[in-house]
Image (cartoon, rainbow, N blue to C red; front, side):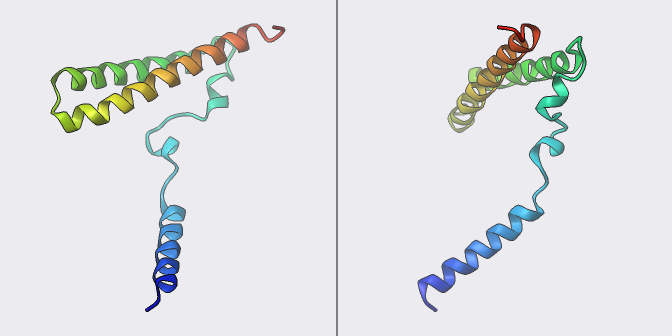
Length: 100
């Protein structure tokens, strides 16, 4: 069997697995970004921010008390959560002052 044939088989399996994989947002019950800004009081956004902050607190516990392998993964997760929270803050600022 040639390498090309093996690689083609791997790619077709990977693409069929990707098609059968559920959307991560729906899997973890995260709303679509536009839904966070639908209500004028930003209640959905505040709820999401609170969930992300609780998750970040859990990750920070892993950073303090986890094994080396857990800490390595937690560092990346914490950075992603902080970036997401920062993005949500910026989007909310923009939504509150659309003229600027």
